[in-house]
Image (cartoon, rainbow, N blue to C red; front, side, top):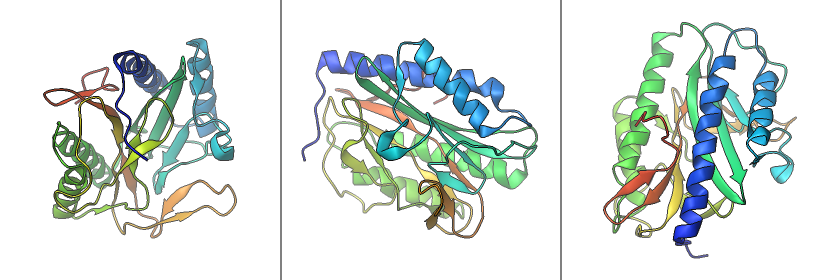
Length: 254
């Protein structure tokens, strides 16, 4: 399949959905405290998204049972919210995708519960830097592979591994579109970026080995195979005539 070039109307619709996704993450921050369950945070996300005349894209997507993904500690991605109670020192990723007027906005970030370990803080910092490095490769004419090449080079140089079993993706008119954005890639590989393309970069960086294992019971939750920590950040990105726009960076974190 070819990579969609979005029209001005589509871009504006996607931008509005991206703003809502970012605002949802900001709203949820107050509930990331010891004692709250991940299901409670999911419920707050569900209510907030619906109150803004939108829908949570993950709910019932390929039978995913919840409205957001919440991945705690060694969970790499696609964590299913449930009865787990957050405790001091936990790190977690909340992944929000909204559907507003038929358009999709997708973003995620890391949260810390109280005081976290130095090793957890270093992992979070490095993962955020990986996303920043990937974003620097986003401009017309550059190869998509250079995103993953630079991310992997930086993560590896800091002693971390990059998850290769999951990737970023085109987004906006559908939840998942072309292209796949690999976070490990050969230099100058893949197709070239063009103005009007919209996609996510969402590196998953592990403290230990890169591989994951899927929970046999829920069929979704992906954990590190060695029980070590994982972290992830994600933005939805629009290629512009001179570079890129971070559609989900509403609060200027990047």
